[in-house]
Length: 285
Image 1 (cartoon, rainbow, N blue to C red):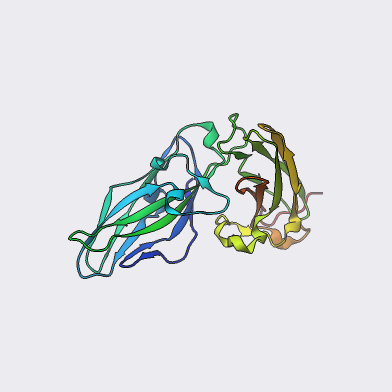
Image 2: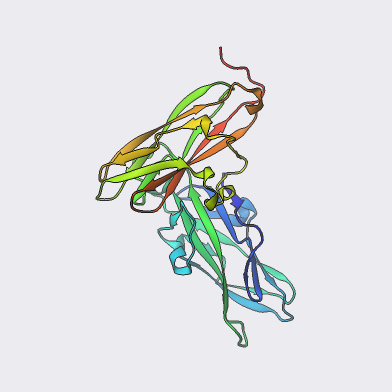
């Protein structure tokens, strides 16, 4: 099921243009399917007009680099045309609002699973009848479906498979082991530093948590190697160990930790560790 998270409160402003939300994340996008974002999630861009006359604004999709947009951990979407507005403009009545809806289609290729991408959505242009040209940007983060068993090498200079290391039905006091695989898709050896992303306040951690999960109260519940050296074009297995406290308060909760993976050259990427705890279950004997 496709889901989304609003990442930024309020809206994006450009003089007399206001657009909400300012940014959002769409999760669990499956390659090969076409999604109407509004039909799937109820999300659409709302464009407000505080003026006394109607305004028509252009709608277009761009690479984030073209708009100066960045979000740590997200790569530029390979092709922004995969995301399309339902039309190339929106007319907003005087003192009113109008909506801009989107479709998203990621090609049906295995390498596009386990991806985190960023795309820029722009509302703007020159008002009809003349006037100052205005533009506002909305950041859309796209996370494709996590898949541990695809055979293809993940796209990007650094690939991670799966993008979610999931542990289900974990009881209080129980330990589990899983793994992620790093793909060094560059022609040079890389050293990767792996840290808890949610401990980095500069990244605004609340933007990364997946609803309805909660951030793990402590990094001590999850462990992994903090440094990996990977040869050119090679892979490395990252063992992930989960150990829940022997405390009944963890029952019925969904916990998430996020592991940032930063190469000695290049941009940070990340993978999620999600732990689902059953309700009112007894610890295994």
